[in-house]
Amino acid sequence: IRGTSLGTVPGEKPNLQKEEASRLTKGFLKWLSNKSGKNYNQLSISVGHDPRLSSEDLQEGVIAALLPFGCKIYDCALASTPAMFMSTYFNQYQCDGAIMITASHLPQNKNGFKYFDKKGGLNKTDISEIIELAESHEIMDDLILSEATGTFKAIKTDLLETYCAHLRKLIIEGVDPHNLKPLIGLKIAVDAGNGSGGFFATKILEPLGADISGSQFLTPDGNFPNHMPNPEDETAMASLSAAVKSSNADLGLIFDTDVDRFAAVDSKGNEINRNEL
Image (cartoon, rainbow, N blue to C red):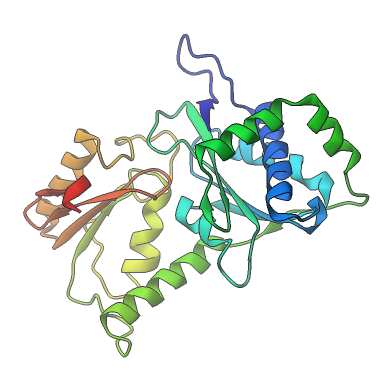
């Protein structure tokens, strides 16, 4: 689900802010309860976001909408879309559902929601049902009557660190289970485009021994001051290619805002993208 969250572009009126976030979240809660057969207060849901300027406000709206129902809420703060899905898998979380606040590669005034249950990302039929539930006053009244008694808080958690440890383990096992730094000798330049993906350089590649000194734009910044975090954007790909060649890197990696898509360039700066991957 995507929309306009900031009124920074003339002619584009915001239509996805805290009120819409609240209603959509309650629609997802009802959908997840129906799907899982669990009462609202038996559900556990994780919430994370990308670095867009509107993301934290939307997350506040999402969490505020969930709190009255007594479900367990994990506040994952800045995260990636794959990490949010993995919150339904990792033993320490085992979430019934996950909400990622992101508009992927779209302009900075946009934002949106990606939803997951234990089977993966929701399909178009599921999304349509959530929107219908969000628009139904009867469903909203039903939810209000179901509010639990008591004061509830979201649990702040470092899901991204759990996810990074998981990926480091996969790489070690895939290369050499006896070598804790299998990437020594490789120079890998990461371009995160100031999206969520800077962790891939600092928390995965570097701890495994890679030289990441040619990396750029790793700091999350919702203004996206250098280029849009988009592996299919010509400016972004040219920027990564130049970084690889100027730093004599063996490989370059570039991610979109929420880190569920990437592309690469080889040591000569040639693109490896889309079907070539």
